[in-house]
Amino acid sequence: AQKVTQAQTEISVVEKEDVTLDCVYETRDTTYYLFWYKQPPSGELVFLIRRNSFDEQNEISGRYSWNFQKSTSSFNFTITASQVVDSAVYFCALIGNNAGNMLTFGGGTRLMVKP
Amino acid sequence: SAVISQKPSRDICQRGTSLTIQCQVDSQVTMMFWYRQQPGQSLTLIATANQGSEATYESGFVIDKFPISRPNLTFSTLTVSNMSPEDSSIYLCSVEVLLPEGVTQYFGPGTRLTVL
Image 1 (cartoon, rainbow over the protein chains, first blue to last red):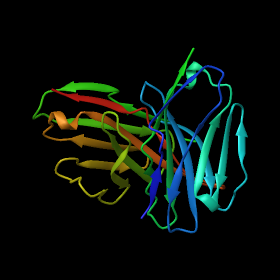
Image 2 (cartoon, rainbow over the protein chains, first blue to last red):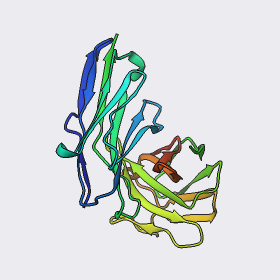
Image 3 (spheres, helix red, strand yellow):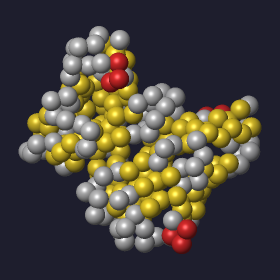
Image 4 (cartoon, one colour):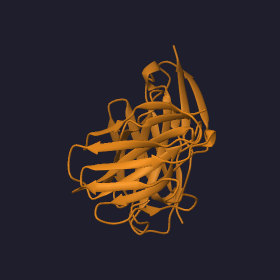
C-alpha cells in the first residue's frame, strides 16, 4: 500500500519569509516517482516537479527547492522569499511502479502568505 | 507536457439530475484518470479510463453513478448521475505522459460542481 503524509495542514507566513512544506511517504515499491502540485484558489492543479526514486539529487528552480531523502522517506519543498502569489494548497503525491499508475495524494498543506 | 481542457468549468445543478463533464487533451494519451476533490479535502481517484476498454473504478465508486466514456485517445467524459448535495465537489481529469525521465500526470482545470 502507498501512503503520503503532509503533517502540516495549514501554514501562515509573512511575505519574504522562507517556508518548508513537509512530505513523508510510504511505499513497498523499489521504483517510484514523487510529485509536488500547486492548487491556487482557482482550483486547477499545477504540476511543479517530479522526482524519480533512483535520483536523490536535490533540485532548485528559482525560489523553489526540493530535498529528497530516501533514508527518511521524505520529499520536502522549500519556498525562499515567499510571495503573496505563493498562497495556495500544495499537494505531495506518489506513484509506485507496481501500483498501476495510481497517483496517491497527501492531504495537502494550505500556505497563506500575508503581505 | 499536455494541455487539458474541461467543460463545463462550473455548474450548479438540482438534485436528481445528471451532469456530463468533458475532458479534452491536445495530444494522444493512453491513460486518462478522473478524480474527485470534495470541499477542503485531497484528491480521490474515481476511475482510470483507457481507450478501447471499460473504465476501472476505485473502491467506493460505481459505474451506475459515474459512467465514463473514452471514445478516442484525446477525449473522455464523466457523468455524475442522480446527483445529491454530497456530490458537490471539484472533478478533475488527468492524463499520464511518459517522458524519458519518467511518468508524470497533468491535470485539467477542473469542473466545480454544486448540487442544490
